[in-house]
Amino acid sequence: MRMKRSIRVRLVMMIASLMLFTILTCWLMNKTLLPAYYQYSKITTLGNAYHLVNRVYSSNSSDSPDSLLVEEMAAKNNLGIYVVNIMRSGIMNEILYQFIYPENPDSTQKSQVEDRIKEYALNDDGTLFGKKKILLAVTSDYYIYKVYDQRLDSTYIELFGNIDNGYYTYIRANYESMQASINISNKFLGYIGFILAMIGMVVTYIVSLYFTRPILKLADIAGKMSKLDFSERYKVDSADEIGVLGNSINLLSDQLEHTISELKTANNELKLDIAKKEEVDEMRKEFLSNVSHELKTPIALIQGYAEGLKENINENPEDRDFYCSVIIDEANKMNHMVKKLLTLNQLEFGNDVVTFEHFDLTALIKTVLNSTNILFQQNEITVRFDETESVYVWADEYKVEEVLTNYISNAVNHIDGKREIRVSMQRKENVVRVSVFNTGELIPEEELDKIWIKFYKVDKARTREYGGSGIGLSIVKATMNSMNQECGVKNHEDGVEFWFEVDRNNATSI
Image (cartoon, rainbow, N blue to C red; front, side, top):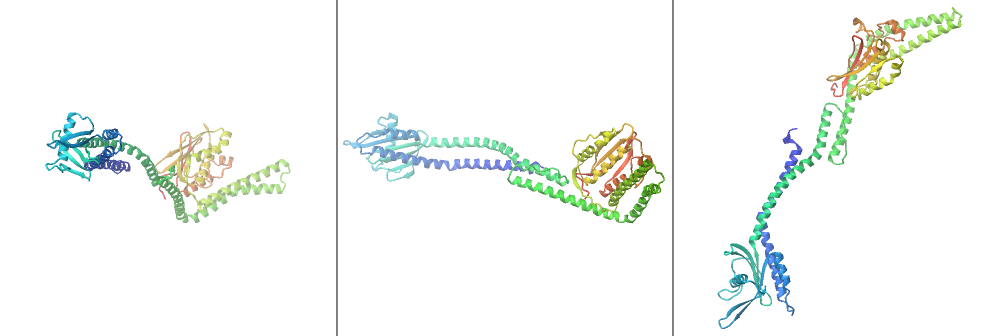
C-alpha cells in the first residue's frame, strides 16, 4: 500500500489541517474582532462604574458614602475613578474643584484630572459636555470618548458625566494595556496552537492505529481468500462498523469455501465422466476376466475338499476338521476379495462420489498411525513421522485415509531388514507429496509399473502367505485417479517408497 493512499496518513493530515484551521480562525478572530469586543466590554464596564458612583454618592442617606465599593470597582477593573464637585465663587467667577473621591489625590493626579474636566465640562461658552475627541457612546448622563494622550503617548477610554447630586465623575481606562493583552494573547495562541497541532498529529496517528489495524487485518484475510486459503478468520470483538465488516468477511469465507468445495467436486465428477466413458466396456471385460481367474483356485479348493468330505475319503476327525478349515479359509478369502473388487469396481466405473474437503493432512496421518500402532508393536516395527506443522489440503478425506492405510498395510506386510517405516511430507508448488517408506526387499525395476494392475503379485508365495489378493494397490491407483492426482513407487538402497499427491490449500485446479 502506498503511503500517500494510506487511510492513516489521510486521517492524520485531515485532523491536523482541521486543528490548524481552527487555531488560525481563532487567531484571526482575536486579531480582528477581539479589540472591538474588548472596547465594547470596557465601555460597558465604564457605564457600570458610573452607575455605581452615582448610586454611592447620590444617596440621601445621612451616612458617609461607601467609597470602599468604588475603590473595589476601580481595583478589579483597572480604572481610575474620580468624583469632583465644581464650584464657582468670587467676583471673578473663579472655578474651584473639590475632590470627593479620592479625597486627597496627589498633585499630579489632581492636575491631570482638573485639565480633563476643563476640556470636557467647560467649553468657551461655559456649557457642559462639549463633544471632544472620538465619541464612543453617549447617554443623557455621560459621554464616553477614546482619547489619545500626547504627553504619555497612550490611548485611553474616558467617561465624563454628572451624577444626580450635581457632582461630576471622571473615569478612565488604559486602552493601550488592552491592546497589549490582545497581542500577547495572539502570540500565546499561535505558540500553543502550533504545539497542540504537533501533539494532535502524534495522538491522531496513534489513535488511527486502533482503526487501521483491524482494516489491515481484514485486507490480509481477503488476500488469503483470493488465493483460496480460508483457514483464517477475523476475531470480532466489537459491535461497530469494523465488527460488522469482520462478520461479513467470515461469512463470505465460509460460503466461498463451501462453494469451491462443491465446484471442485462437480468439476472432478465431470472430468471423471468424460475420462471414464470410453473405458467402461474395456474395464468390464477386464474385470470379469480377472475375477474368473482369481476365483478359479479358491473355488476349486472348496469344491475338492467338500467332495472329499461328502465321499468320506478320510474318516479321521482331525482330517475332517482340516478339510473344513480349508473350506472356511478359502471362503473368507473369496469374501474379502469380492468386497475389494466391489470397491474397485465403484471407483473405476465412477459410481463412487468424491467429496472434496479442506482438512489438516498432518492430523490425518497421525490418526492413521495411531490406529495402526498395535500392528507396529506386534511386528516390532519402528515408525517415524516428524511433521508437526498443520498442512491443509483439498481432497476427499476418507479416500486419502484409505490410500494411506493401504500403503501402511503394504509396508507392514513387506518389511524386513531394520524393520523401519518412515512417513514424510514434501511441499511442492501446488501439491503435497506424502511418502511411506519401509525397509526390506526391493521391487524389480521391470515390475514397478505392473504392481498397480489388478491381481498382479510380485511375490505370489508371500502374498498368499499374508492373504493378499493383489487388489490393494489397484484400489490406491483408482482412488488417486478419481481425485485427478498422482501416485507412484520407487526403490531405495534399503527399501521401497510409495507416494501420492493431493492439492495444497491454495490450489486453483477447479
